[in-house]
Structures are given as structure tokens and as C-alpha cells.
Image: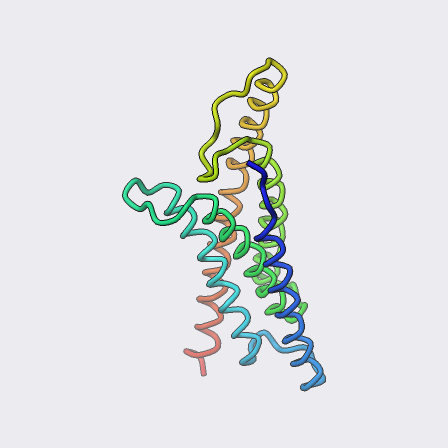
Length: 187
């Protein structure tokens, strides 16, 4: 299967459009949108929801024996798209301030996105069907060795990527809880 980059091009297009809207808001207000303002909250909430979809929907589809909606390759493309666009929106939400728990969450977000690009590269080294199922070992000792190495690398990558993602969502949920507490309950 020849892996196409549709999700990367769509992500780039979405980022360009989001950047244009963000630049318009900056131009209109003559200031960087505050994370606690309406626009800052809006892009933060949408970005977080996209990241939550990244984490849950693809994983549910991959692990569920009952749910067979859509091809795995399409779900992976959706996972990649939301895993790029969501964190970008969360980055814009920060108002370019990276201190405290929100700064740690942003750092984990950047690490997980970088890790996702590494995982995508490793994933494309393993030949698959259109539905994303791994093909059997190719003929030839050299190809079989390369395939085994790619599978080992993907296994190690999963062992790193998933715990970082869990740490990211833990800090994000604490950040959201604290923001709601301080912004609403203490007023």
C-alpha cells in the first residue's frame, strides 16, 4: 500500500485557516488573545476536544471487537489530523505563556505531537492492507529483518507514547478543573 499524506495536507490547511482567524483577532484587538478570554477559551476547548477525540475514538475503534465502523486506515488519518490540529489550537490558547501546570501541559503536548510524528514514520515502514492490517512477512531475509525491526521499534514507541499521552491528559484535566474552579466558583 502506498501511504498518502491526505491527513497532513488537511492538517496544514486547517492550521492555515485557524492561524488566519487568530491573526484577524489579534489585528482587531491589537493584542494576543488572553487564554481566559472568550476567544482564548473557545480555541482551548475546541483544541482539547479534538485531542480527546484523538485519544479515544481511534483507540476504541482499534480495540473494539464489536465496532467495525469504517476502515482502520481512515481512523488513523483522523487520529493524525486531530492529533495535529487540536494541539495547535491548544498552543494558541496559551497566549504564549508557559508557566505552572499549564506550561507543563503544553510541554507534554509538544512531546506527544513530536512522538506522534515519529510513530507515524515507524508505522509507514510496516506494509499493510488498505484496512490497516499488517501484511505477512515479505519474502527475502533482508526484508524480513527490516520488518521485524520496524515492529520492535513500533512496540517500543507505543510503550513510550501511551504513558506520555496519559500524563498529558491527567495534567490537562487538572488544568481544566483548576481553571473552572478559579474562574467560576471563586467569583
